[in-house]
Image (cartoon, rainbow, N blue to C red):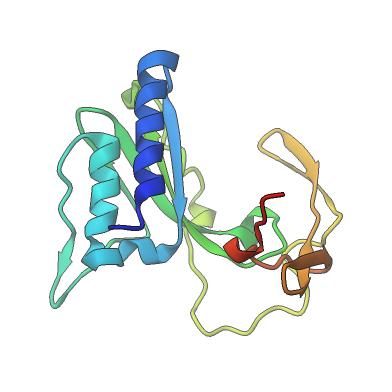
Amino acid sequence: GERSGLFFAAIQIIRWARKHGNCRFALWENVPGAFSSNQGKDFAEVLRLLTGTDQSCPEQPGQKKWRYAGVSFGKQGLVEWRVCDAQFYGVPQRRRRVFALADFGDWTRREPILFESESLLWDSEPGTEAWEEPASPAGKSIKASGLTGSLSAYDMTAFGQYGPGKTSSTLKQRDYKVA
């Protein structure tokens, strides 16, 4: 749609990186609402531009709906997608996002990347009560997949201001200021 200028600019960058920099992977991230945007046609366009094949929307009786995980491939590459919730990855925030990983290399010789663990494929029931404690305590050191680091959480304390807290608030575009 008309608000997709940034996405199409990213596609141009990916194409340039593939041609001039031997780029093998590209990661696209968005909200789960991307599945229903424009009756599912917008996500089909994402897949088309990343794989090089026409991707029609999956149809179910009375509605069109994408699954929360899937794979599509074409002449340009393969795309794996999956909805993940940040709370299951050591982040003190409950936030569901769609991740689509494009592989432009020889994907036939590797294991799936976004589907590595059966235990991560479940989805919690809607309407469950929030936990009293954050998903992972802020300030706690983590080690996952060979990466190490420290978690920090920042709550929104006032309009456009964030400070240390127990859970992370979602950053808002209106809070971004160019100095």
